[in-house]
Image (tube, rainbow over all chains, first blue to last red; front, side, top):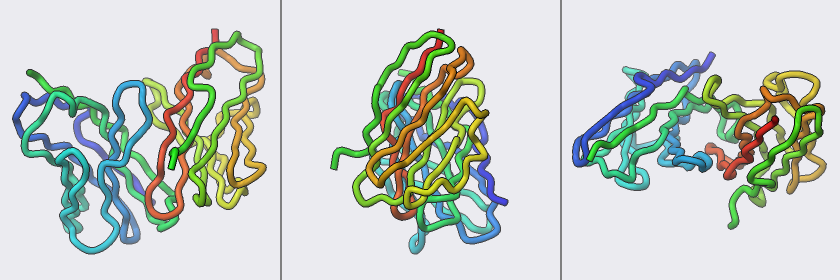
Length: 114
Length: 111
């Protein structure tokens, strides 16, 4: 069975500080991994994805994530938080290359403190 | 590409009324998903279609909910009769490979 755990439903960081949002997954087969961002009153937008190849993936708005198979993790990071990063972030895992069988985490709300 | 299109963006209706939400997936995508998002339950998958065929509707809460996909470019989610507890944001998403692309959502309020 597949599942996603996001540690910390709420994370606060100061503007300019490191952003670290944690995601651990369980999967019986090699997973495809995703981070989505949801701004207030908007839909989910793909930030970045890991399918195959390089385990460090870069996404939009300066975010990146590293797939660590041994730790079953896919943590999201950004070196310096910006006020505009305040949003809800969702980690997701898929075991299908057709976008089916998608499993979302419960989300982490990021607050950026001026 | 215009992305996934959903209509209406906002819907306010009275309890007992029928509500129909509409979705146009991205052209060329062969899978379509309906989700519901609430503060209490988070993001829930209601149903998904592959090549216009419903594959998994185990997330549909009850018989009041129904979904159709008559062709590759259109899907509907219907609630009849609607109840206040159906108030939520309903998202449609489509995919071809790997990732899902979400629409802007329909905010449904049932009074």
